[in-house]
Length: 311
Image (spheres, rainbow, N blue to C red):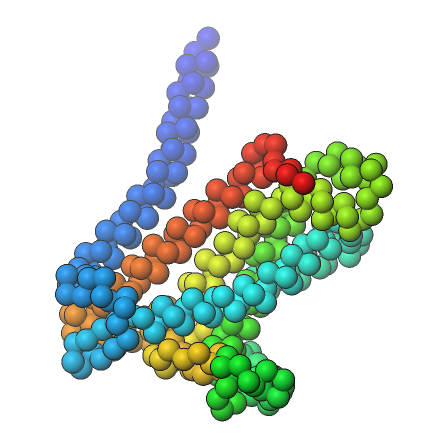
């Protein structure tokens, strides 16, 4: 007779424990936000929004502007998505719709293995393999065919925005593949059977029935990849050149927000210098958090119920 109250008390205690664990996550995020705002307050008061529209980064003179770093972050991430999205979606369609079981398992394992490689290893591979290949092979090919465009002018240094975009593309492909594969596999079989009953081929079934149903989840996968690219530090730092400049050429060296924080935080000698770096980190934190929230919302739209058939 006494077992029921004891079980109820135990269940309640376990529920409270799990609730406390869940509540710790937003508390940690809030504590991080408050700490960043507090540490960056001198720079926030000194520079305000002009911090984002200024190209001068002069610690000696106490002048700081993150426009070149924001430019490098956005452009390198855009290059990565431009290259990674078609490749990632192609692999996801293959794994969810075409690959037999004996192929799907090892391929998915290899894709997941790419996500597990440390970024510093990607950076070392980039220095010793990717940079020489870009300098000796890719850059001459691009300049001989597309050299009339401002995007591909300049000396073949190997390091630069294009190299950073290439290495980021390799790093974010696993995120696109993993999420896109799962949302495509979540599409009800009735969707495929209905399209096939109307005479659709395999590709037409995928194009008209599977992808439209899963497009919110696919968009979420792309946003997750974007968040990963925006925050990547070590691999990009090792191949982008770390020059705070804004140039149209993708072959020119550049800088990113995360790279400047990693490179200069230990050398920051003044309170304003530290605050400027923290201010830059605060902006990167907010942008990445927003992108991740948006991605999760889009993915849940596919996982939580009837989806989007518009075609």
